[in-house]
Image 1 (cartoon, rainbow, N blue to C red):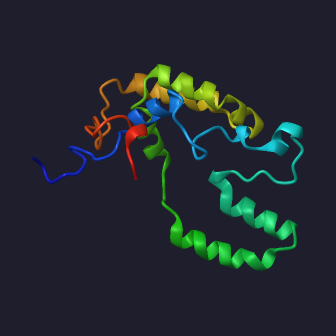
Image 2 (cartoon, rainbow, N blue to C red; image 1 turned 60 degrees about the vertical axis):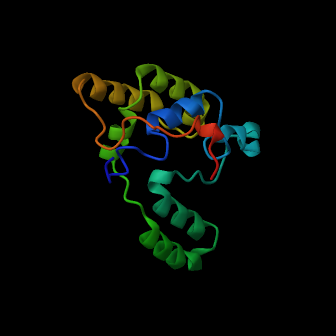
Length: 157
């Protein structure tokens, strides 16, 4: 028995989490946003669409544009303290653990979100597949298989 929690993680691997998501077990955090956005269904004409990867800049612009620039300093301070520093290499490491079929199913699940919010998801999936083909023996260094007590959907917080 190792002291390394990654040898026997108490949580699902990324691939196992995605498989549960693709099997229809989801919640409001992981379901496509177009399912929840009533105005999105009525009209695609927005004053602001704020994307996570440019959140600080776009959110500050929206605050200034709506006359709430006094909040910019507070928001900047919050994000400086609470940024997780995720990187593109982390992104590829996790998504490379998925099968081509899982990648295609994710693309299908989020296709409408990708279209509406102007993300080139097809290109991203293509790049992940190329990474996998170029690195056929790559194994994510932290996770292999979850040995929890059943499917993610049966776990309690």
